[in-house]
Image (tube, rainbow, N blue to C red; front, side):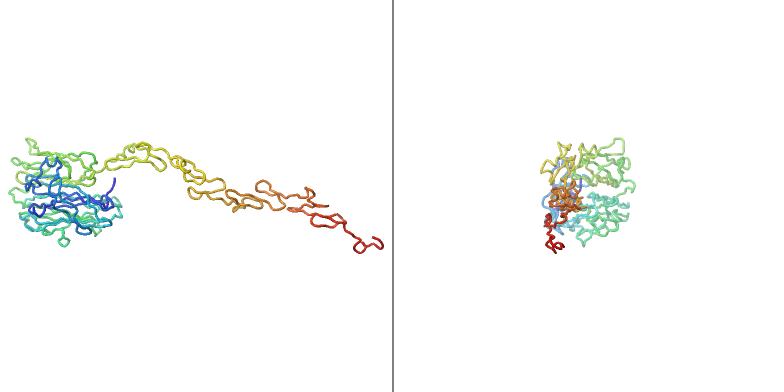
Length: 556
């Protein structure tokens, strides 16, 4: 389950229109999140049009249920910085519509690949014109621009996810009643300390080509955090709002990792009704800004209930701004009460794993609207491995919409869940130089006597003579895989290591002609009196008469 990369997933909530249909623009929101690190982008754009303009743009419940692709294929989101060319067309599948406010909106996903090695990008959609009755910027060009980094983050190990947000195409505010328009934001990036990114909102800038003719075009309003504050003194009329939602790694960071455009219309209308007579949302058990976890594959259903301000006033619509795949029932009245309701149902798809924002509000027969409630529907993939390890004997790996079993090193998968031991020794002796010993899930190599291990598989000869002369008393001779002891001349082997003196005289008198004398490691020969040595072993008679007549006076 994982997470997305510079193959980034670019989610575009765009209420866009082409040049030929300029009076029908309803603003835009562009969001993105990574899929992988290879430069591919999955784009999901959401577009809103004036519903009654043409049959190509018309949407109702049957359009939603049939999943028909509608809209025009001649307008494009276009690369501006770091890339070139068109990203994709703006055709879409309808998801929401309002009969009373005469708009429809939808979205569609497609893939775009950025150039290899690209670290950041900017893309925008621009054309003419804003609606003709704006207080500021009427008939002007418009531009919505998204920017982001595609580099892998050091704190998360993946490419950054942009903030997620959503707004209705038209926000209605009663003149004379102070209001706060909350821009719902969410971010799925979690880094050290289980901390999410810091989300900030700012006015779009003309110098950055983010808003064309409607930069800060809502005079009197102020932006506090991601809350647009509208005082009671703002005059009636139509206003375009152009904001940028940005994420930062920490609260002290000054460089945004992504910038998401948020553009929509505000209608400040006149009414004789009191400020506290607007309809209310009741019985939903949903708090504005709440995050609701949904497991991928499950179906989420909620009854949205609105109550009118009193008798004679009815609820005419419960307006939703929803992700792709939502279905909404018709408006129902609880007879005898002031309440009306719709039932919304959603089964998220695999591509919607992550944060999805859902907003809704009620409108009554006096054209008054309730405060809007927006919640984050965070879709989690179900993890089959959490229960009994998915039935896997060893390793269970969760995937989007499924799972698979695998085995530890030394084992082979048998069937889909079981693991059996690999006999590594059965092939090429496991790579061992000498002996291979199979174990459960592994194996070991060993060496024959006289050798020692070299690495996991190898064996090298042991020089036994290098340590304590191999235990030999006199001479040690190292051999490949073994060694031998030997003795000096005059000694014989005593066992494997020892040496004993040889008594050479004990055999054939050591070769001596007369006398043999043994010594440690040696022997000598000697001759009897009257004889002299002749070589090492021999004796010869001494002719004593030959010298001084043997000392005899007369005859010797």
